Image (cartoon, rainbow, N blue to C red; front, side, top):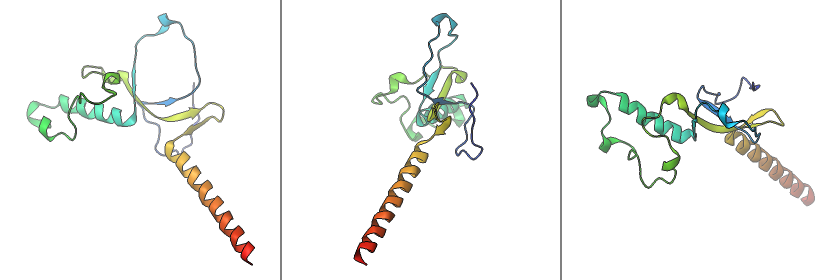
Length: 136
């Protein structure tokens, strides 16, 4: 399925990005070729950084002590849902936005926040205008 995207969409849809949707399909199990990993944007960034660090020669790698986070944190609650270090990169994707099938639009968190802030500011302006007119 091809998705219509607005050219001004910020941030743009990346090659490894999937869009979440409430649409459901039922497909036969024997048509599934491979299982892929779909991570949050932050988890994807962390996985790619760890994987890229492992590809460098040992002398150029960032040492375990200098990493911003401990690699393979055991206390991270979603650790079991993350791909292993030897997972092929072509099986790892990320998702940070939702595609609304009814409206045929891509929604982002910032877009929703912006919409609610605009609605709040316009309603507060209406309230202040009403108070001003009541005083007169």
